[in-house]
Amino acid sequence: MAIRLEDKKAIVAEVNETAGGALSVVLADYRGVTSGDMTALRAKARAENVRLKVVRNNLAKIAIRGTEFECIDEALVGPTILAFSMEDPGAAARLLKDFAKEKEVFEIKGLAVGGELMSADQIDRLAKLPTRHEALTMLAAVTQAPITKLARTLNEVPSKVTRAVAAVRDQKQEAA
Image (tube, rainbow, N blue to C red):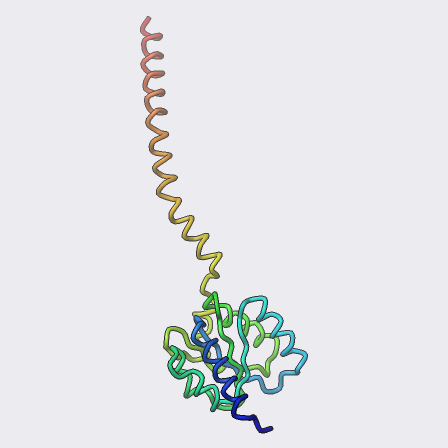
């Protein structure tokens, strides 16, 4: 089906804007996946703030120029779905990895983060990254640990003084 020039420009602008704000992208071959399964994948993606784009490869190559995802140019071969993570760099990787487990015909081609193209077998590196909430929780725990230790140390000083006074008292009572 032919696409008008204005529509192509709009598609390129939309994908470029998405790529410009994304933290990572995962590429996958979606041949053989039913439309119902794709609809379910899109619903999960919206919930995870992952933007899925199915775009002709030549338009995708134009759209990613000037972004950190120019490195995926060589991977844009055949039917490709692009999954852009907008808030959590590992969200798209987790989503497509889980989907690929369910649907054997769905094949992950590669991924890119920080301007580096990685092969599909590297998806676990990205998928295992903590979510934003998990990272903030870990940061809070690490930040809280020294404060907690300081409070325990300061609390031990009066306790030691109390034990020392009690020991002196007991010693004097035994001597008397």
